[in-house]
Image 1: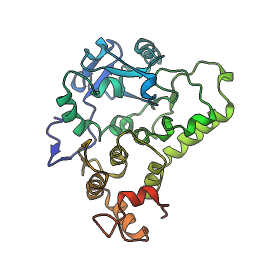
Image 2 (image 1 turned 30 degrees about the horizontal axis):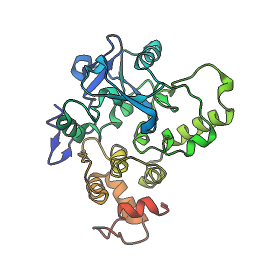
Image 3 (image 1 turned 90 degrees about the vertical axis):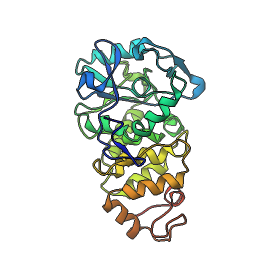
Image 4 (image 1 turned 30 degrees about the vertical axis):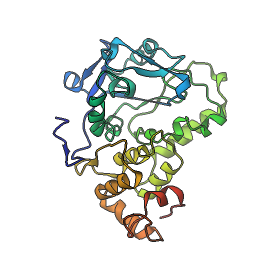
Amino acid sequence: MRRDVLVNNKIIDSSLHPRRVWDLYSNRVVPWWVARQLPHPISHAWMDEHDRVDVLTPINGHEWPVPIPKDADLDLIHIEIIGNGRFAYAWLDVLCLRQVGGRREDLRTEEWKVDVPTIGSPYDQSVCGVVYYFGGLGRPLNLKVCDFESDRSWFRRAWTLQEITGSGDPIIGGETGDDGAMEEAVRTRIQKQLSLLQDLGGNVVEKLSAMQKRVSTNPVDRIAGLAYLVTVPTIGVPAYYEAQTEEDAWSELVAVMMSWFRAQLFFSYPEPGSGSKVWRPSWTQVMNEALTL
């Protein structure tokens, strides 16, 4: 089914169910068609590479190494998630999205064409809220004010912008029950920033402005991270290519963007585009200049 949705380098329906889900009762990653239930999505901050370790696990059949924080444990994460008791299936990127370094790197490249631009789907479809590990996957929640400015902060990563849902209350992972472990100002800031993200308006300027503050390992990821937010599922989104230039990826995204968002770019941006099109701003312009509507 997922192979059928990729037509002329475009995913013709981005409201896909995920390719795989984590069956919490059997503690195994299984194909979506086995579960046929909406999984509970998990979102997390990614640690620096030197603070992560690649783990081979039977949970995903040893298909690819699972990158987790050095002080985290997949078994303990499983216990915490299943202990919530509200769901049987979950979606966690490191387990359900094929990662670098596995047996079939060629297959990862092909899967990512479809799976990466549609990461937002399980979050958008969730009705029970999202589990958030703001301190890193499986790690205790013990943030400091300075952590919000780190390039590794959950609130500064490009991919997490689409991992927000307005349905259900957020579930904060890593809570230890020690109210004194984290400043009240930090808790307040987490709730405030989550609320602001949930209320991102129905205009493209707010979404682009939110992405300006975010960073990614691969520059083109910031564009792919916007795709689910600025398109209509039935019109589709561009496929993901790691080596694509930012301007080419931006041009492809604008071509399938909601017509209302395209109109906002045309009418609200005060200068000619500096890229391949004069009528709308280039990617460089929208990421480096103040945007107003």
